[in-house]
Structures are given as C-alpha cells and as structure tokens.
Image (cartoon, rainbow, N blue to C red):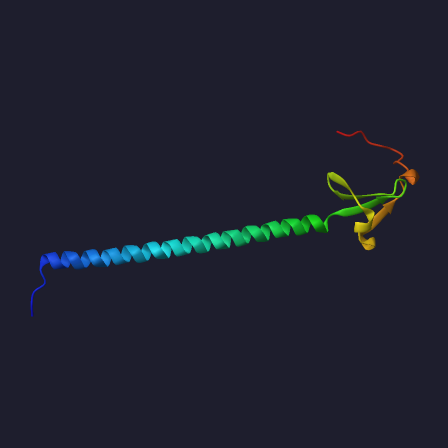
Length: 108
C-alpha cells in the first residue's frame, strides 16, 4: 500500500473545504430566499388585515336633505354614488332634525 504524500493531503483537504464552502453557500442562499418568501407572505397578510380592518369600519351615510351619500372612516368623508351602497349598510340621516346638545363643553 502506497503512502499518501503531504501534497495529496493538502489537495484532498482543499477539495473537501471547497465542497463544504459551496454547500454552505447554497444552504445560506436557500435559507435567505425562504426568509424573503416568509417575510413577503407576512407583509401581504398584514396589508390584507389592515385593509379588512378599514373596510369593516367604514360607515355609509345618506344625507336625506341633499340625497348625497358618503363613506366615512375617521377623519375622512368621501362622496360616493348611493346606488353602490348595499341598503343594509346605509345609515340615513336628516340633518334638519338635528338638535345640538343643551350644554356644550369648550374644545381643548
């Protein structure tokens, strides 16, 4: 049986280390891509949750005096076509029948 020379040992070690570096680089790249997919999925879920929260909290109001409809989400009012609002979501108000509170406290 032939003895392995020092040069051959160095060559074998270099090949093994090179393979290990390539494998580790590949695993690291795969894990980073996996994290990016998870982060993107979480971001999309957060945006979906935010949008659902806003749409669940929208109020649809019809001014009976002007026949204008609004959607309201504090602090924003937007005029929208009345026919686009499902009737079960519409709150009709008549501002001419509005009575202010008897005693108003000053705003601070």
